[in-house]
Image (cartoon, rainbow, N blue to C red; front, side, top):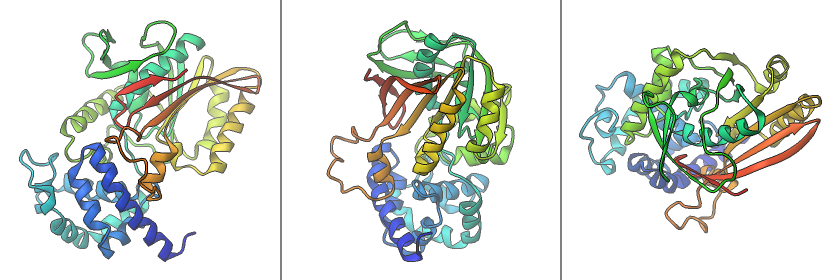
Length: 363
């Protein structure tokens, strides 16, 4: 466990790094709060209690959650998700500091008991092309297991339509949501939405899409300026609430073996912005688990995770030498793998953007 001084130093570094990241991601309010907060001992101390790898977001979203619960507080005037005419972000920090002081115990309880749940329905734009490719190889109906499912939004990716930037549309004409996605490169058949069999979600803390309070926690992770994103997530949560999904709470390394044994082929395990929080030992254990489970079958895996560069910036360890280009370097990586007979074969690799709006196939 890190010493207190190291935790505070790491928290200040994470806030400094978050200024650039939030600027790229289109949230000037959080960028401003991070810049001012990095030099404020009280805010740094709160951030030090947040989830490593996303500590500033953990704090800001906890505050957003409390404001969504009680939007009458003056700080709400700076959140575009709470007012049609938000005040300038550069004036927000005094109110933010005041709010954190007044609600310190509530915030600490949230940081200690609630996990980071950055669930966006827009991630389905990346999921769809990847699982389309898996289905072309594995067959249908494709049975899905998501590690780090939160409320299960990505497990309903097939319920939405997708407008392709290169032209065309995938999905039903009367879909509840239509998401725009760009797909570059990639061999094989045209994109399509595969038929889905079982939907199984694993998470340390499964969220109930039908619970008003848990929906509020998820919605709080939408950036304040992203009204449309928050509205789309609210719509997707309604879809999740009426879709049969088997949710299993607990450590995936403990729950996954039985799930794999009970789920028929074709089977795909996937995760998105989840293993970024795992230790190297836990990641290796997952790989070994899948290798062992594939001795007499094929198991497909789709991994959508941030690059090491992105994670270094999140934790405040980047030197800034590669931050040019308007954030173009801040990307994720998507890897499609097949485990068969205890052997691991990488099928495809793609790049993704922070907003998950495109998939660029590398191979």
